[in-house]
Image 1 (cartoon, rainbow, N blue to C red):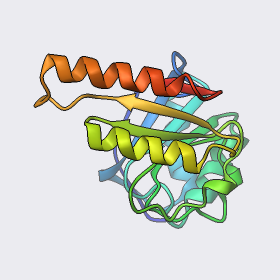
Image 2: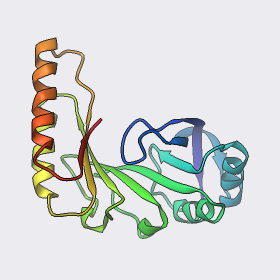
Image 3: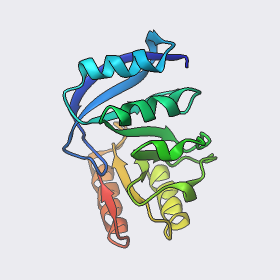
Image 4: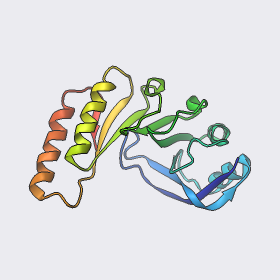
Length: 182
């Protein structure tokens, strides 16, 4: 295992199926370097004051993360991993309690491997993003995972365009079971 953690922090989850739950976030990136799963899990045991741990950033599927997810589970934690759909799904996918996969134009992730407790997130900040979300919802319509739009409008959009885009997102989601807007 070779893992670099930029920071650990706790907050309330702001989106997804765990929205509202206290969660310890592990942001991967330049920072504290771990070479042993035991050291990484031990640090979380010392810092975490809640049951859920979410790993975000580059490296969530790198070598050693499967044993890290299993180690967290053995210590009583539930895990949530965030990943871009342009990344390949790992062989240890079922070692993680929940996945949140960002739908992208260049998906290589096997969405068919996701379970009903997992989610596909469609980041929408523009009309173009909304059109991609519509395409993705149609493509994944018969799959069991939750699908949701994370609406963060581009600052360059006018107030009127933001309102129209938000209304279009809401109207679109009404057609789908288990669809959400955050």
